[in-house]
Length: 161
Image 1 (cartoon, rainbow, N blue to C red):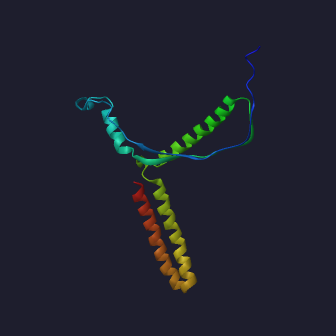
Image 2: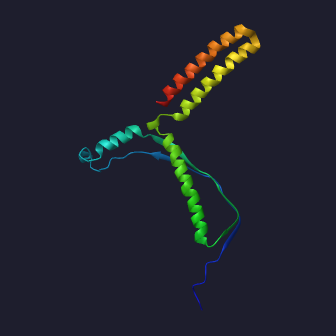
Image 3: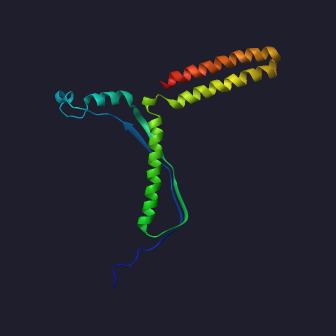
């Protein structure tokens, strides 16, 4: 008999793997176990700098779900390769999101949230004042809106650093 039969094809009617979340904390540790020698290690200063720049505490790496419908694979390794490619792509995407949340970059999400709120206030207050109280209400609303815009920009910049 021939023991080298071709691998069986795999047909998948429906495969759904739910999203995966992983909570992570990045903590820099000394590179040398002997405390008296740590200051002589060539990367000692780099570690100190990295400790100051990188702060990643309980960050969540979110991997999107995998859905396969009416899929055909030449072998189980082909199916495994498809799943592997999906999750590799998700990990890279998640790492980019985590890098964007590092304290090294400040907090870009807070920056855009605060600026966005300031812009909304800048347009909302004058139009609301005009509708409810006429020209005088427009002037008061313009002052409030300008104050809200300035506060959003200043507050967002402060939160980002």
